[in-house]
Amino acid sequence: VVNLVFKSIAVLKGRTRLSFVQLLTTLIRLGVDYDRESCDVLKDLLNRIWQQQKRDNKFTQFFQALLELVIILDQQQKEEDFAAKARAAAEEQKAKEQKEKEGADAKRGSSGGSS
Image (cartoon, rainbow, N blue to C red):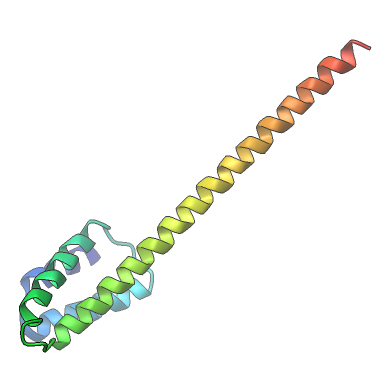
């Protein structure tokens, strides 16, 4: 359902589109899962609208709401990337420590048998 809302924003017009952006922002803040590739559609839409509205230096409520949503999505992606890197580093450190422990155990076992 959430991914359908992403796609609907790109094709809807008027207040309905603004309502969908506000709904999606709320859902994302609540932690609802979504397809990360859907973010690209909104970023492209944001860029197109910005190109149109910057000439007049007047930005619609829809543009502002969409900008807020894209910022939230980017922030979440950065946090998820950071957490994934931290987990990978922790797993790598754990594997290294396990390997060192196994090496020390093997060394103790071989030196204990020759005395």
